[in-house]
Length: 110
Image (cartoon, rainbow, N blue to C red; front, top):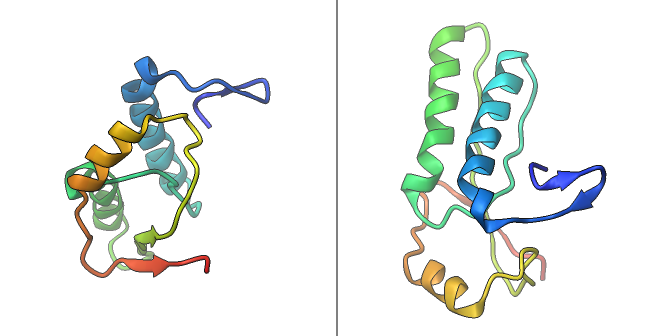
């Protein structure tokens, strides 16, 4: 969403960190507004996912027992094309450092 302007997708790797910050802020804001949130991203390590888990934990602490943010981690498996024209060498490095997440659900479209 961050890289889409006026309906045109324009991914810029130089703005990736900025996009991640924007996504976390949008996630936090939506949860504060009581909305459900789906973050569709590639988290190849737990440390990349952890900030979103912390946002959910913080929100749960604020809400106490009135409402809880349920977190589901869904891992998609299969062969997919790159939406960002990521070079195969980069995808290979991501695969090499891949960490499974405890209690993740696995989605296999086949």
